[in-house]
Length: 245
Image (cartoon, rainbow, N blue to C red; front, side, top):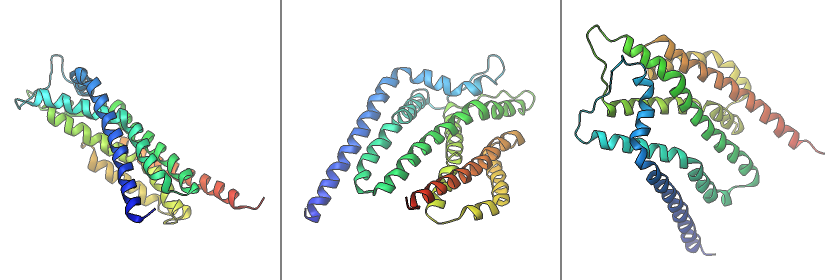
């Protein structure tokens, strides 16, 4: 096959995979659209639960009450279809990978997705109640906490991203070790620096209370240790495969 024909074939395949992903995303979004307001209410529950009885959120722009739930429905649709989207990406790149690369990439993609979802769940169920409890309790006397729904969505998405990325630490550690960028021994040597860095990251990405900072820093450190354990285990498996039978 000529280079030009090969390029066209790859572009056609890419268009097919992108179209499949977009259609799936739009179909799920269409199904979720009637419940967009309910999805936002579910997302806002950690804050609403900490407000005084009768407390509520506000919308300062005319179109915000419509577009913010729409954004939440789109975000939920993306998360639901993410495994299928990643599958389409995998089907596109898999033919160009060697067998040993396929054995490594597929588990890493699955683990990365599950860890990202785990980070979001940890933020929603464990961190948000603590953060919003601190914020509402710190409000001065006579000040009613009435957060704008658009700003709340931005804050929540930022926290989801921070914890989702933080939970990718084991994957990053394994990839760096397998690529030969760093050794397991070196990772163990810099453990103390990683712990300090984890608390600095916790101070940057969480509100200014000690509990929420610990709730980001401690998981980051533990996930770093988990990445080292997995890297050692995978290294042993690789050594056994290399041994003559």
